[in-house]
Image 1 (cartoon, rainbow, N blue to C red):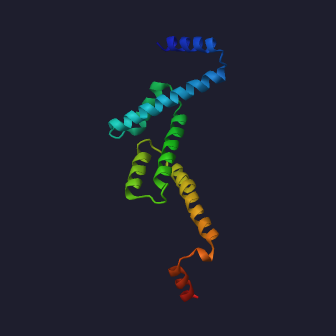
Image 2 (cartoon, rainbow, N blue to C red; image 1 turned 60 degrees about the horizontal axis):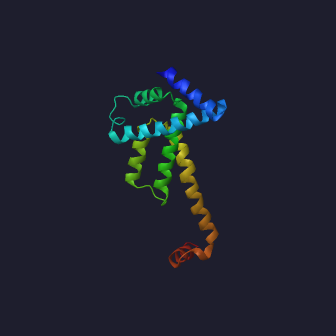
Length: 154
């Protein structure tokens, strides 16, 4: 069966006049989309969450699709970053957001250092924006209560 798929792929490559890199890029793109879809199905059905070994579940998924595990890891990280950006869009991470992010971190086995980097990048840029806005508003940007508090402290 695998030889049949490979022969069909080579035939399509020849029909469209694709080079090896172009064909590999298209194959990777399609396989990535299929991986994402099957990962979403595994999450929504509970198969991933309740599997004995999440790593084995993900490894089997990669093996079934002949998908590079490193590319799968990159997809997991991208999904986490997107969810973190959505959750932090309003500048606050609620308890529900934290629970959802923890679940999202545990299921695809995302390493802690990757999580820390994502939080540093995304939450750090939000903090930086707030600080810059505060500095840009100057002393006149404070409301009356803040001005009174500063006068009392000085």
